[in-house]
Length: 249
Length: 179
Image (cartoon, rainbow over all chains, first blue to last red; front, top):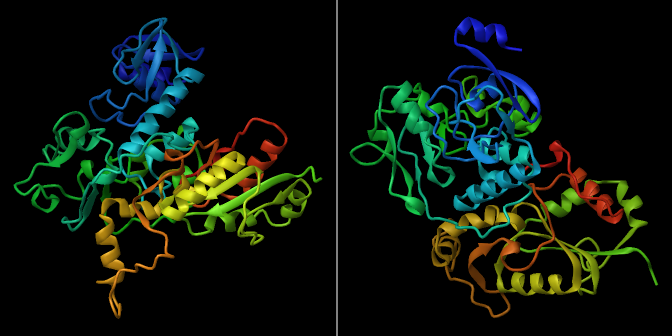
C-alpha cells in the first residue's frame, strides 16, 4: 500500500482496521487522513486534507469500541477497529444528508454544479433517494456582485471550507460564519457584506473548495456538460472529492 | 376480471417530463402491458380514477386542484409513488417559494414583458394557487420515491419490475440522480 511513501514522510508506522481491512497510519494521522491515503472512502463534506479538520458535517462519523467518532478529528491508533460502512452508519448518514437538503434550497435540476457537487455525490453514494422531511424553503439571497465569483447562499451547508481556505491558504479573511444555530449563515467580511468589496480573487483557494454550488467561479459553469461530470460517471468513492476536480475545471 | 396490475398516473405542478421519460422504456411498454393496465393517466386520457394498485405522481402540490387530486390518489391507490424532482422537493416550480404569491402573479400577469390588458386571472374555474409549492410527502404518505429530472427510463423499468415481482427495490448507481 502506501507504507513506503509513509515511511519516507517520517513518523512511526502503526496499523488499524476499517471494516476489517488492515491499514497503515503514521503517528498523529487521523482515521480519515490514513483512510484517504490508503484509498478507503469514508463519506465526508467538511473535510479537505489541505485544511484543519472541522468535524462539523458528521458524515464521517464511524464506530469504534462502541463509540461514535468523527473520523476526520480522531487520531488513528494501533489496533483500533473501526466500523464505517455498516447499515446503521449509512442510515445515519442518509438522515444527516436529508437534513442538509431540506435546510437549504438545493434545486439540482437548476444548479450549474449538478453532477460535480459533493453534497449530491455523497447522497448518491449513501443511497439517499429523497429527503423525506419537511422542507424549510429558507429565504436566502444570491451575491453576484463580484465579476469573477458568485455566491448562492441557498446552497451553503456551512462546512466552513471557504472560511478555512481563505485564512489558511490565501492568508486572507474573506469569510466567516455569523449567528448561531438555525440562524447561522455564511458572511462576507467586507464593509458592505458584498463579495465585490472583499479581497477575494478568482485565483484564491477559497474560490475553489466549495463542496456544493454555493461559491462558483463565473463563466465556466457549463464547460463540462451535464451528464459528463465526475459524479455522472463514477461514484465519489472512485471519482474523489469536488476540490480535486475543481482545480482542473 | 383482469388480474393485471392497475396503474394510475398524473402530473400536478410538473411538466410531463417524467411521463415522457416513462415512455422512453420504448418497446418494453408492450411487455409491460401484459402485466399492467392503466387507469386514469394522461397516457390513455381516462379522466376518472378507480381503485388502483399503484399511483405514480409527478409534480409538486401547487394549487387547490393538485391538493384534491393528490388526496384522491392516496385514497384510491394502494402504493403511491413520488416520481421526479418536483414531486420530491417541489423542483423548479418551488423556486417561487422564495417570493410571495402576489409577487409571482404580478410578475407574470401585470408586469410581464408583452402583457396586454394586465390583470391577475380570477375566473372561478381556475384552481387557486397555494402560497407555496409543497412536496407530496408533506401532504400524504408516500411509499416510494423515484428521483431525477426526469427519473431515467431504466429507473421506471427497474422499479416496476422489482415491484411487480415482489423484490426489494434496488437501483444501480447510474439510475440515481437528482438532476
